[in-house]
Image (cartoon, rainbow, N blue to C red; front, side, top):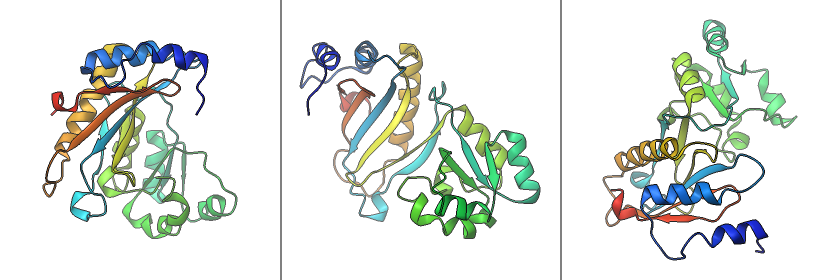
Length: 230
């Protein structure tokens, strides 16, 4: 893959193979985010888990103290009083059965997170094939299947993110924007790491955090020493 001049310049700031302290890594990632837009800073955490085993799965959610810097559009599947509650809480879209053809046939995806009340999961389940691969399926572990739609909407708007293992047992999550201060990014990163450490499966043998990399949308990755995080 051919990288541009800015990427090559930014790469010079980072020593290949070096494992940085958290604070130094955050400073380097901010410095190497030189695109014309406000880049997202992401954490990529490679775990020693084997996600093929149910007892080694990791999935949960955490509210980042400074949010993600991104405006999140929320779709809530609810009816009657709960639908009104979701709208009052600030959900961007609220509906039920009538949204199925819009999503399935018209390819409507103007939302980033889906929340559903438990009684609507029969309806939402029919969208499993389209929502599942996009990581949009509501899940009780992530707090997106709940009767407390006000709390769910408020937390997501405040910066709640979901973390889960991908097929290669890596967790990819945003921790903020390049415009955030180093302190804000450090707070968010620390909150995320604490949640992931707490989620360590009891069945796991051996090293849990294999590698932790911070990167901006267009910049090079900066590796953090995982031993210093546990």
